[in-house]
Each structure stands twice: as C-alpha cells, then as structure tokens.
Length: 112
Length: 109
Image (cartoon, rainbow over all chains, first blue to last red; front, side, top):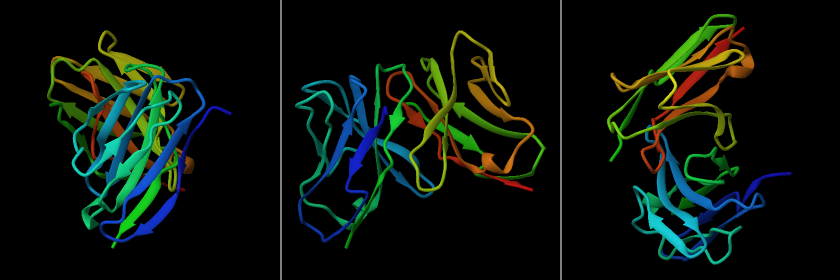
C-alpha cells in the first residue's frame, strides 16, 4: 500500500530535550516536506526537500532541522524543543512539485 | 510570498444542500490550486485540483472554479452528505504550496 508513515504518532516531552520525528514514504517520491498545523493558522511549511541531499526552508523553519540522506526518509529534528513548538506535525511527499501531495497521519507533539 | 485567504472558517449545511468555499490568493505567478479534505485524526487528502490554464473542473459532486483575473478560486460540493463533514483546505502554488486556514464543514442529516 502506498503510504507515508510517521513515528511517533504522539509525543510528550520537556523543554530542551532533543527529539526526532521520522517520516518514510514507499512511493519513490522525490519531493518531501514537513508542515505544522495549529488552530486558526492552517498548515504551514517548515522544510522541504526536492531530492536526496537537497533541502530548503519553508515558512517557519526556526527551531527545526531536517536531513535527506535517503530518498524514502525525511526526519524532522528538534534540537532544543520549546513550548511554542507544541503542534500537530505532518510529513508529505509527492512525485514532483506540481503533483499530488500525500500526507502522513500526523504527529501530535506536546512540549512542556 | 503567497498569501491565501479562505472563507468561511465554518460552514453548516443540511444534507442535500450545496456548500461553497472560497479562496483568494495574492501571487499572480500561482498556477496550481489544490483542495484538501482533512477528516478527524487524519492527514489532509487531495480531493480535486486545478491548474491555471483551466477555468473549471468537476469530479462527480465536487467542482472547482478558478478566476485568474480576480485571483480567486472556489470549491463547490453539491448534494452534500454527512460524510462530507470535515475540514477543507485550499492551497495555491507558485512554487511552495501555501494553504488557507481551513473551513470546517458540518453536514447535518
């Protein structure tokens, strides 16, 4: 089944404790991205990647890092999480910039 | 960058009625306009999209119209059903995909 998977689905952590949210797709897609979803603000792009080893900032990149060492994986790293990063995070992939984006099921992160 | 405005933020209709959600965008370079549906606890899923060289596109009960001159596009759902209840997002893309803030649609039986 074609899908985007994210882990963990739920995470509660404390301020400053480094964490990684994994994202993997099995569709051989070149384009991957991370979004955060907050009430009243919709979906905002954090980072995106056009291909392996190519990443770029989205609208809200501060406090986040990503890497794209393999085509299928695109982890999101929070080196020192803060409470304002409490949010619902989605990973997405597509075969190209103008192609349908497939979203993962989301990761709900709470930083206390 | 691109700014996408979406209205209304909430919409309640009776089953069988039509629902219309409107979006405006700011960047005249935008040329791809998808609509996503997000059900509770799930990620957004593409339901229909339109490119700038097309004025209207239909898929069964769903249609999207685009007015490039006025920089607005709309989602039309006819003969609504309770399973249409969800949050709908419009988006516009000159390059990166920029989303509207979403419309929570409730279809009551």
